Length: 269
Image (cartoon, rainbow, N blue to C red; front, side, top):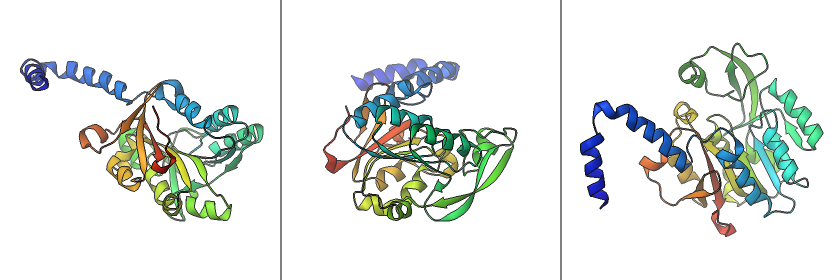
């Protein structure tokens, strides 16, 4: 039956004159599988995810990497006042807002980036923005080729998550949230020891257009996180990505992915 439907559709609609219609249908359909639902934390599924996770833990340890001005961190503290929260933002101007938020909401803020190795790197942002933006990235190409904008840059310190965990005697990270505009995979490479030793329960990261410029595929995450079940967020539920399929996984557009360690016996539905 499926083959018949495909055949009929191709005969009628696989024509150049229907390209814009097919494109519009595609842009609509991908929202139904968790792609480009960026308008709010409810539509992205982030609100539902936090509700599901935080009820599981009494006093969770949470890392917010790429915290920006602290909106996500403040949501965490509202939902879980007794959580121990570490938030990281390398942008020198944006960090001022995060620091103020951390004092108000009682969590720890750090003006550093996390990556695959200790280093100093350049962080890029829009040249004409004096306050700093959420698009700031370690990948200059995102501005020059994706946003088509001139850039300014800031030198930032980079450490690994493994080093931070050791230096701060952290036993388990219950939720690791990463939003680093294309650098999420490198953050995880710097957490290999923590991943191997079962120190991280749940990881929430983004896969989006920035991965084109960092040259990271979904397959890279799938292989690195082989001990985790991967899910894509929907507004009120989750898609369990049981099998890697390029046509369904390599979609370089905004989406939230959650990785749950398999031995936790915690399934997202």
